[in-house]
Image (cartoon, rainbow, N blue to C red; front, side, top):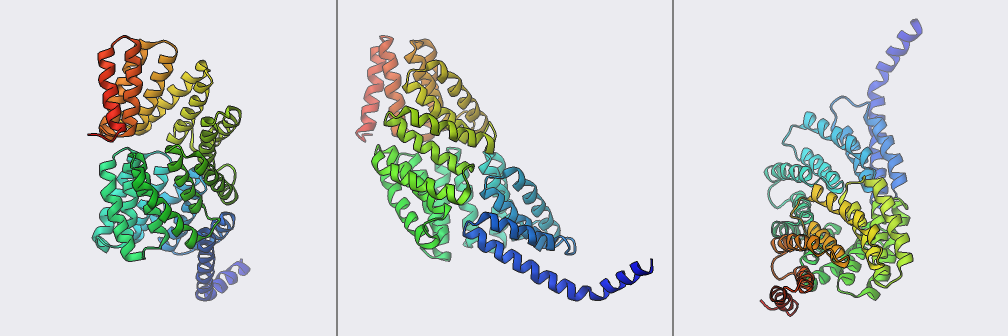
Length: 437
């Protein structure tokens, strides 16, 4: 017992010096972890973050530095697609900050924003939007409407609207975010590049290709200069520019961009990351359109396996992979294999994105085409009608996808000898293709 008492007294006597050393060690680990994370050295960053967390667990409760460690670790896990590990760390960081700093502190908003990012990547859009809105209210009140952190929150909120097909709500938020970041961070900052990329995605989704391309190219140039040729953000920029070329039928320009993007992602994130899967899916789509079905199938199946494992069976990216694998089988006339894939994709999109999302319309169109190819005209027509209504509402009457569904529906009506109706739809489609009002 005497030994224990002496030991306790000795520790108490040395505690001020020990605390200072402990804080210095925490700061060293945390700073080094941030540096490794920013350079996408994720294994090294995790080791350093865990070391910082171990030191911070000994700080008096509640200590904002513990929340910072947990937040950084959660962001690292999110970047690696390790969502099940990220959420409890993110929620614990939020709880500590609310207790230590109060519910209206900017750091609480940061935690809300990061938890929203995590939900966004899991396809939980309603939950993400609520978190972003709460964070935005805190930041505007505490920091003012022109602060760079407000720009971050606006960008994230706009991205949620884009993913849900709420394009009219998304564009002014993206533009406000871009103006804030250009003013506060400068025109060559990586966050400016991220915003340009997201605004370009919005324009691409709306068929505004000529407006999207210069934004993608400016974003790519900023990222490569600021972060170097092997950073995951550069892979994202390359992938998105490739997608734009692909949607315009410029596959020869798209293919090398996709391959360069994939090489960067596999090296930086590992072969089982969801972003690797998405890139594999995009490469598969190029091979499908070129008629190289065997190669496309291998890539699609590999992509789907990664996504289901990383994100679960009801994520929008899984639905997209199922839909694209169905397209491959449709091209080969393997109709019995197509229908369950299309139906499963439709079910996921309706559940996660809601019944009025453009992806639901795309899925309905594909099912209608399948039934039409099988001569099941009565089953096909209601799918075309519903698909057309969704696309017109979400994208406007002049969008290229509206022209596509009009053409498909008109073909069905012609087969049913409803020629007057078919002619009317074909006339509308031709007007859209010519850019007429």
